[in-house]
Length: 185
Image 1: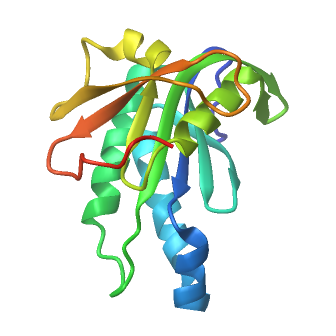
Image 2: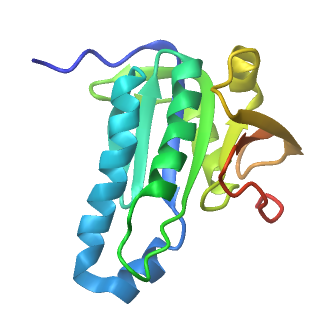
């Protein structure tokens, strides 16, 4: 069965990034590939049941797209729970930062281009492993329909690298998971 077409128009992106991936690779060597694949499998499984599609990866980063902001937020929370519960090998403390943003992007082949792609990348980079950061645009769409056990913490407006306007950012507070982090980068 062929994969459904990638959504276009207003979409919600989820970007993920493993914190400390270079140090992790150096410390565990050849078993890093299996760790990376487990990480991607867990996130893709959550995306599959919530209407999301992986459309790319770069190094240890994974890029997902959703026609629904609610589905994207649900995947971020479910993925963090799945990653925290996964039996990683001894000495592996895998922490994944995630950014979620809703906006416009142009579909070019099987990839996207547009400023909102850069915005979600910058939102992701502002966080820490285990943290999910959400843009104001996304929160406006999901505020009344957050997944069970998920609330938000206002992180204020932040200047993000190379973007001309500050972005109001929120953190998903996911029950049962770490929710205290250093100030945003």
